[in-house]
Structure formats: C-alpha cells, structure tokens
Length: 157
Image 1 (cartoon, rainbow, N blue to C red):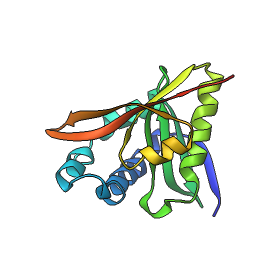
Image 2: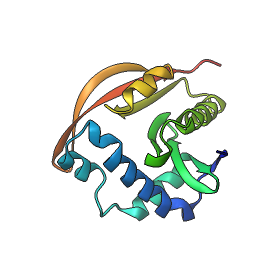
Image 3: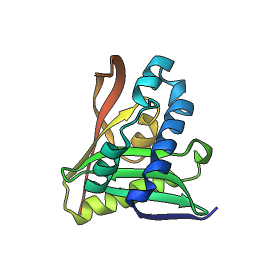
Image 4: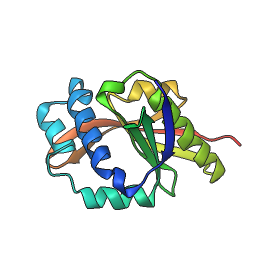
C-alpha cells in the first residue's frame, strides 16, 4: 500500500469528518460507552467549524492509494489537536508517519514541547512515540464525562 502525506485542503473536510466519525465509532468504542461515543462523534458535526480549525492549524492528510486514510493537526502553540486513522487502515504505520510529519513541523517552528490530550485508546501509541503522561484527567463534553490523558513530548533540536 502506498501512503502519501500532504497538506490539508478545504475540499478534504467531508472525507475527514466521515473518517473521524467512523474511527471513533469503531475503534474508540472498545474504551468508551456508546453514549460517550455519540457525544464525541455525533451525526451533526459542525463541518464549517472543523474546516476553519483545520485550515488555521498545520494539518497533515494521509492518502492510501488516493483515499484519505488519516489526518493530524497541530496549532500554533504546539498543541497536537487530532490524530485519526481510518478504521480500515489501523496498524499500517499511517499514524506513525503523521506523527513524524507533525513533529518535523514542530521542530521547524522551534516548539520546545508538544502537548496533546489523548484517549484511552491512543495512550499506548503516544507512549511508544516518546510522549509522557502529565496527568490523567476527567473532562466533560456534551454532557458526557471522559477519561483522557494530558501528555507531552520535549522536542530536541
């Protein structure tokens, strides 16, 4: 399988939102309840809000044979906001490539630290990439309480 990385384009938004919803509903469902999943990735995602946010951030899109199979983004403070890989492309190295691209950008921008809030599902992956847990936290979103982890990675230049 050929994986290519590129910058996000506004016309990617429908595929990205669909990928996000599908991943949360299939992959993250092993660690969160159905009510939590429905709050996190509802049918009525504000596509325009997502489109604007991904344009403001440095957003990397992964394509597998011409199909969007993953994405990740980092804001201008060094906060790694999203990292999602299509449910059908899990375990293919796509997330690793996106993280490498995000970290390369962070080094270029001279970010000293990358911070991220990760799900229970994503925690082992981020630990394997050198991120450390700052704290476990309970957050509330759309009436649901979630356990996630505040993590960080010190960048070296």
